[in-house]
Image (cartoon, rainbow, N blue to C red; front, side, top):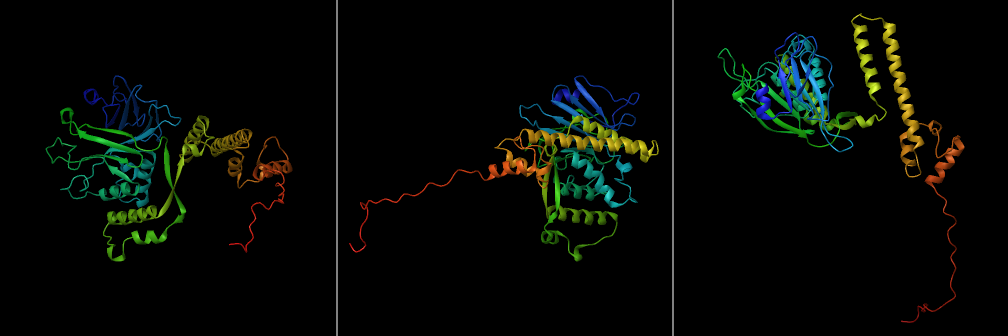
Length: 396
């Protein structure tokens, strides 16, 4: 690993199935390391010190995948971020390859990963013609392709470039895959390093940087405005439907989801949509979620969870109210209309003060003066007695 980082000058190193000493992955000089789990670590992400403005883990502590968010150095008010998911193929515990589990759980798992991350790197253990043209699709491989297409993720691998050389002399294959959100980031210079191959897998390097936008965002769907005519055009015809096994059902399932997502308008939900959010609320949410997991596992009492949940909800109400009061206090004549738009559909009585006015009548009067200012009566027209510019119509 040290030789790879030295030759490639990498700032981020994604390691799967690392060697552990007392459940601790090895350390690298000038790198911070982030294990996926303290007790069972299948993935670890190394980030070069001082290479980024900040680094944080934004996924739950699972053993087999980890999502790390790195914030780039920038003078912008909203510095760019890249969320990187490091996944290990041992995802059967999350119903990735368990055949007797409901199909929607497969989409739920990768929906969580692809929603959090802009780049997903993993040893998928899947064969498919999309990345290895002379291979037949392995079990569940087509479902992985369907999910990536649904969330508009693109494969960064160079087609037919081998990444795994088995130590038992079996056929080399393309198993280590990298997917990225082509709307958010750009990935280039993807290539392998055979000279640093330790066992069976080859180190891979590539460059990634933000493409558009300077803040984290999640593309939500406005399901109230679905174009059902467009959805019907994208759905397969009854003659095209041929379900023989679970994989065919999954393929049809994700085809329906893809049609719905293409035919539905999107809306952006960003961290700036909640300007009242702060680290204290994030910590209280983490405590609430942890307490709920303990309550679900019968490790704590229901009353304790209720107290933690109610405290979290009260903190949200207080934060939103304080933020709103601050917005109203900073309102001036030029921003008054924007403040009123934010208040709707709240009644005017919910506005604390408007330019010093506190009662409903005074606030209404301030709004009338701002929206319909009185400029005084119009000037009176004074007719002129001069006939200098007058010409009779009878004269040619």
